[in-house]
Length: 193
Image: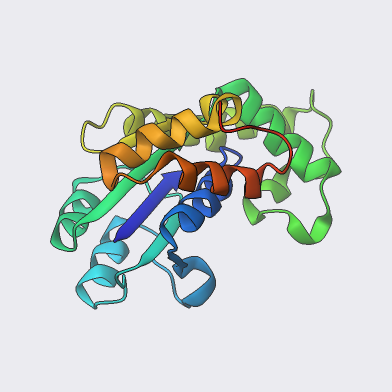
């Protein structure tokens, strides 16, 4: 099994990755591989070179493109997109840049570091980079060949949300999903979620 997870910064991308890794016992290519693909064409070359190994998961901020669909089709890879409410996503990015631990800040968040929320620089980033990220999320959202997860639903009803996702990929027992959820959200959810 191969899984490609796509989403924009501060959408829960890595939380979803950890959950699916635990459910399906997948290796994280982001942690194991150097020279990861940065766009659709590079991803296609990555797949063609046999680098997207069976039993693994890859997480990226790719834009939605047919080349990704074709590459995934060659190796029977499941594509999962995660999207988040635009306001809470921006708020999380801004707060992570200004309150988060410096060593854990994503390079895409650095332009927000130390800037006032009402500053012209932040407004320019919203109009430029963040609006492009929202368009990318919208493109994935409207793509009928992708399994889409809503961040808010994953947080509110993680077991049910993951059960629905897994049913579309490779069904697993609800108990397995509950174990992954309890590992990610210790004490926060029960099997009735």
